[in-house]
Length: 250
Image (cartoon, rainbow, N blue to C red):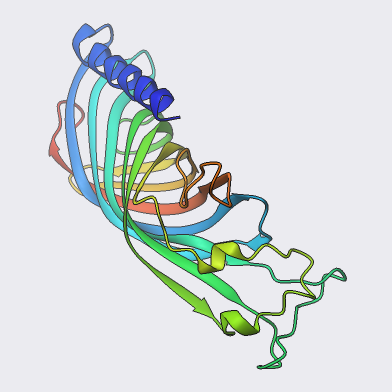
């Protein structure tokens, strides 16, 4: 997987460099910077499977966009972010009748959630169509994303020794007693959205994005319990950018 990501990333940066130097379309040299914030709905794909509902958390950071060319009606750009993100998984602890599992000690439905905090760095090839300045654009973007683990927090309403394993329809619980082993995460992200530009004010972007992790949270060798434990995340984001440099369309 790491080899595939390296090849993909190398090809991506070659394509961006070629677009910037070939100048087949109209030249642009537009640089914008700003901030972004949003909400992340995440889960972890375990093998063996762990029943889950989506884990909710915040995300936000700094955005940089460089527009290098307009090719026919397509604005070609590179967009990069440095974000703080709270992601993880939340277990759906049910019995075979799809009813909440009751803990024998607390007499409450069992709940378990793991929150993992990351610094995430996505780099996108960003393509947009519509009004270049003073109007609305639709955009699509895709590219690699790197993640650097900071810390984790577990929220549970039962002790490990008292968990009600007998009544669980999904009896996999090894993930609850493991700490994050892989501190470096990597994968592919794709997104689409709308950008509204206001001359002399800036750009407002609304986006939906999906991230698929190619790395694992826990070990995945033959000696480890889980063969896979990769992140899956849906982001809903808003960003505000202001121009540092622009070449057209006052």
